[in-house]
Length: 202
Image (cartoon, rainbow, N blue to C red):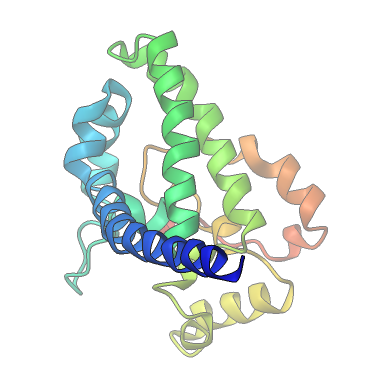
């Protein structure tokens, strides 16, 4: 009785190892391919509006003195393999359904949806503590920059203000701040005391 069980156990381990050797690189390749601007911009009409938008092309995340360029993935996807893969499956499925249900070749149709999506993305970034921002920007160092900027970030850090609550309209076409104010006030009673202009207005 023991020998067959041992064979089954070793067989399972070998199969599991073989699947892992194949699936992990395949998943990494899949995530990389579906995160590129070429894929995002050419796979649906909606994203083509985004990557060709002058606000996006000329934003500080695309054009800056450091030469560092942030891609779609850097801001909109988690940094670890499992969560990133799940985000691709979940969000990709939702976007596919939305693309099949709407004609995003019409910019007006896309703009109507973009307002709601902007709110959703902002809410998500608030919930995850602006995780994608902190993968590039370290608040402790920002507090030691110019006096005004340092003071603002020190105050924001003390009041647990998330990056996205101040730095809206940073990369994509502007959305009126009033769209977010009610949610910000609900999440952060001290928000009015931490009144910081959007980064592209500083």
